[in-house]
Image (cartoon, rainbow, N blue to C red; front, side):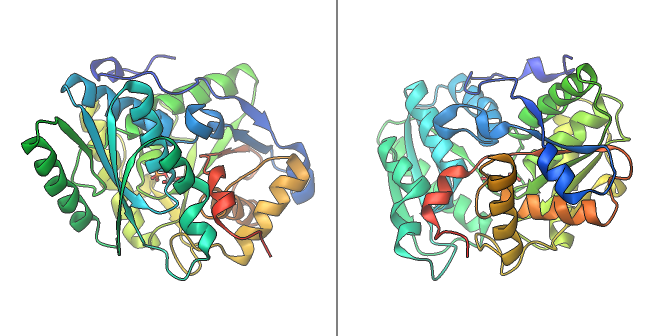
Length: 339
Ligand SMILES: Cc1ncc(COP(=O)(O)O)c(C=O)c1O
């Protein structure tokens, strides 16, 4: 299925697509609630330096960067950021320099958090890393990146900044508009009646892209359940709506999504961003032992815990639910083993 409007955006080939749609028979049996079944869309297998959702998103940012003649890409993120790791990999692959601002957002973490997992890969991928003490203020982080970009351009570089804050065009969400169409085509072919999609909701670009993509395909009967991993449900709801509206506008599709379409829960947020919870640790172990499926400690394990909670609450009725595995597995090595 081809998505209207996407061809207008420059794009760099980074992800292995399509990713597979697989059933989760053992988890489905384990929950035993009689609904259609659980499936997983394997976006952990997008291929770019251990994969994840960011590979789809970065195709559009790097397409834009290259179209603008960039020589260096700048990004900010937490020490175990998957986004940053994928950006470092994309820059390496496409022959650009990469400068990373790594924020110490998650306090009181063991030494492996600071040296292993994603941050180890950032170094291996040759990115220049600048460590900064804090990072709760997204606009502040963006301003710091812009200042750095200014410095680099004075030295003759052509910088391209991937901003964090929602005022900037959410080019990454375009990758998930396409993913929605990909998922619908796979489900139709396999005769799976998808009624729900469950996804970790952080910047909200994956969530918003899926929502817009489903609506653009005329499938507003498929609910997207966003599991908050970064901020409260009320803040996240507003953020996803802003992002979805911006993506629809980018695609020239008008007002496809309204506030009632944005479903989020912060029931799995626990102590906040980057902190595992007892439920997320249980979900991580369950996915590994029942399905041989590796999920990460603080995004997909919270999303999986959220999916199990929704299943138990009867949210999927008699239809099937698809878990979007957004990746993040390198962070397994940046955290202690689940209790
Ligand atoms: C593994 C993983 N899953 C989900 C997300 C959330 O995706 P988004 O930022 O598009 O909401 C992230 C964000 O960094 C992530 O690293």
